[in-house]
Image (cartoon, rainbow, N blue to C red; front, side):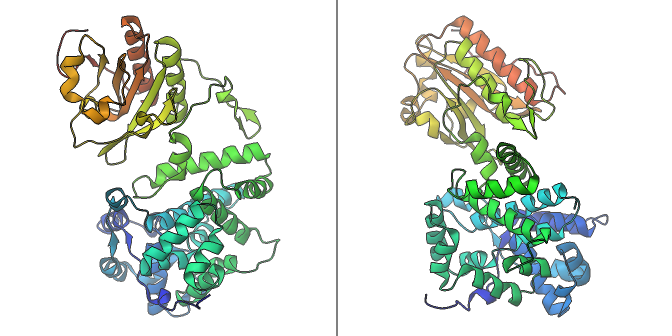
Length: 473
């Protein structure tokens, strides 16, 4: 190894633009309390690190008594905290989508997920509301964050190696010029991290559950970020199973649910979200009949009737069920669910049933700024049945690249709206489409909207054949 990189300790880590926006909003409110600021800081490791570094300058030695960011902000004061916020660089939102390259958001996401999992483990272990444990988990890999800031190409090489199966310690140690653990400990001291964060980076008493929770949460975040099929996942699942006192299947179900919860919480940030990757990753929906029999803490998940409204608006199970019935009842052989991204700028495939792995529709990623049949459908609740009789009418709405993805025998399409806002659209195609199948397709799409709307609104029937206006055909 080439030796420690001393530039890391002097690096100023950029914070997420959404973090800065939300913190400024809170600082403008007279009713804001430190715990609300802390909730935002726990989603952005760079912002939390900036707070502890500022505290080190303002109150040397305070890190030995401070346990979380709310306490640190209270010691700094809101006005100095506001000035600190104004000095921090920000990461441009959506930069990864523009460049197509991974960036520091990957490491930020892992840290934020570690904090989320640590909070869930703390709640499970009888430490509900404890923010010392998630704060420590958020801060476990400062060297990776600093490497992204000072040498992004090195960080990208290491990150890609981890995705390819190389252990994170090996990949990042090679780029850092020193063992990752040693670099993390060095920065933790230089940046005045709280005691538990530093303790979890080194050796600890096996009978002390707090650093154990921190390291377990960090391991879960690092592994699931790399891949849900990562070779270390089985080892971590066994540790999680032991900690939760659950079977491995139950522990896996617990982790999947926490990843989904984390994805919802962090969806405003420009982070990669393993929970969404787990739930919506394009691929086959398995055809087993026991989809709802996954054990949850020892009990089978209750089966839902076709018209039952899910209190939680479970997107995955609702769409999976509707897509299966579309294939069974409408003559569709291939069914696709495409969903809008967070800022409703792109439409991307999230679930696919039937067809071939190489089908272009499985990789659908459309810019909503480009007008075509798919993006136009999202404008309002509406549907269309593409067939030979109306093909010429819609030809102008189907660029050649998109047209090649569609079945020559026709297709059903319908936009989905939830709480009066566009969610995405369902697509079905095949060789046996007919008027009755189209009616049933529309009814099943309406049912999906009603379930996801949690039954709180009456879903209006969409305008049939809405792009452009024309007689049914």
